Length: 101
Image (tube, rainbow, N blue to C red):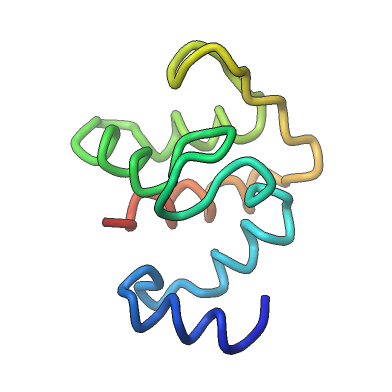
């Protein structure tokens, strides 16, 4: 990601000090189906955070979804398993998504 894009996101309040996790999401191809603030193929990360922010165990549940995929929670398009993502990176991504507002 270009430095200018990262700076713009930081100014917009999208990057709470976690630009490394936006970079991680980009490097793991998450951004092919998701964006931070609008639905593409999958839901916006902000919408995921809003849905699960109060749910106990949300980070673990999202980690599992990132790793194994899933279907039905956000419509008919299934999320494939992400075999290129390690469990440690999936945990970082889940924690980051849950910080978004």
